[in-house]
Every structure is written in C-alpha cells, then in structure tokens.
Length: 349
Image 1 (cartoon, helix red, strand yellow):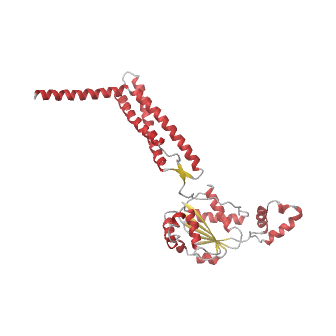
Image 2: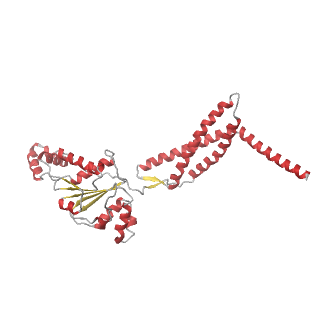
Image 3: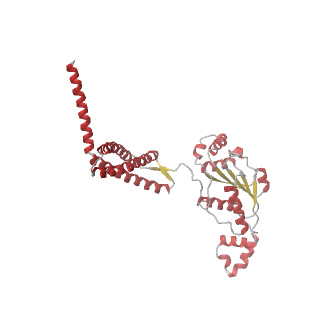
C-alpha cells in the first residue's frame, strides 16, 4: 500500500512538473509567438485586401463573390477584431514587463492565446489558397433600377409640374397604389422614364426593391408581359421550364416577396392583372403606373389617381422638336419651314 501511495505521488509530481515546464516555455516564447502571429495577420490582411479589390472591380461588372469567399471574409474580419484587441494588450504587457512589477501571468496568457490564434490564421490562409480560380459569378439578383436612355420631357412649366406631382404620388404618398397617366399629349412615357432614371442615378430616393418596366403596345400579349416581368426578375429561365398555365401563379409568388414599382407603358385596353400574376390590393410598398391614351382604360383598370398629359404649346413644342432634330431647324433658309413642321406635329412626338 505504501508503494502504491508513493507511485501515485510520483506521477502527480511528474504531471505538475510537466505542466509547469509547459507554462514556463509558453511564457518565455511570448515574443516569438506574438511576433509570429503579427506576421501571419499581415499575410492574412494582404490576402483580404487583394480579394476585396478584386470584388470591387467585379461588382462594377455586375458580378458577386462565390459562396466560399462570402463565408471567408466575415471570418477574417472577426479574426482582425480579435487581433486588434490582443495587440493592445501585447503593447501594454511589454511596457509592464520593463517596469519593476512585470505581469508574468498576462504575458503567459497572451503567449498561449497567440499560439492558438496562429493555428486559426493558418487555416484561414490555407482556405484562401484553396479557393477556385474564379472568385466571382454573375449577380443572380436584378439591379433595383435600370437606366433607360431618352430625352427629357421637362421642356415647360406644365411638364415640370406634372413630374413633381408624379414623383410625390410614387415616392411620398402611400394612399395611391395604382396611378394612371393618360392623354394624347407628348411625354407620358418620357415622364415615367425621367422618374425612373432620377431614381437610378440617385437624384431621387428609391423606396422599392425593384422597378419593373413593361412595354405593352396595342396588341396585348399576356405571356409577353409575363415574360418581360420574369426577365427583369432574373426568373425567366425557371419560369419557362413550367407550363404557361402556371406562369401567373409563379409570378404572383415571386412578386409578393418584393416591394415593387411596376410600370405598364402604352396600354391600349384593360389588362387582367390577375391573369398576368400581378399582386393587387393593399400591398404596402408596391405600386403600379400605367400610361395610356384613354381615360377609359384608367377607369377600367381602377386606377386610384390619374394624371392628364396635354399637347405642348407652340414654344414648348418647338423646343422639343429642335432637341430631336438638332441645329438644322435654326438654319435661316429653312427656319420658317421648320416652324411649320413643328406646328403640324401639334405638340406631339
């Protein structure tokens, strides 16, 4: 029994000595461990910077990071945050150690933590090394707003006033969900294009997840309208794998996930929005604009408010005519003829 007791004491003693030796070694490797971690963090930071620069350039081309990169970057950011806290403590411990009362326990803890972090940083660096060559893919999500080129219609005070009215209805006034723009005058399409482009370039705030522009034209094609909406939602390929009978149901589900502005341009007769798959009712944050020549179409589609666009007066019509034709109308020999042509247009384009 005495022999067994002595053996137990010896084993416990060995464990204590081994533990003490490990701690002492860790303590004396403080400088080596913290310096090594610092070097690894510099290597990791350089790698992160290279990837972020690559992603920024790719983002301008409409591309996004692949999933492994998306998962890697937050881990690197988290590690950098931990390292920043540790670095402050390391600097503080170095000052204390030069004084009369060195904090040995703090240096031991930092040295041990550095050893652990070195392994974690190495794993992050190895993960980066194993990324595929292509770090980005085409963005599967549509841009919220697309620029649509075209001339400005704000050629007179009336046009500018109509634009301000439309802007307030779409952006600031939640009472109206369905807005009709009607009349034989020039500028229905250009009016909403102006609004669209000012939201695209940041001149106006953009409160929608996505703005969807659909050109309807005289012969209504429901599947054509559905196809344009699906294309804008980056949903067209998936939609076309289904029977056309299911398109409305699928589009309805897709659109209900978003706060959208749907623009239906050049509507000649009533469109059954239910058959298209367009959500209706009191959908917060969702609005529909339609342009049409006829007020009757606005009534048939139950618009909440209507904006009438009239023909331009002679001077505004001449200004618009000149913008499209260029400097030629002002040539002295043909100026009178140009004026007659502009008047024949009767303020229409």
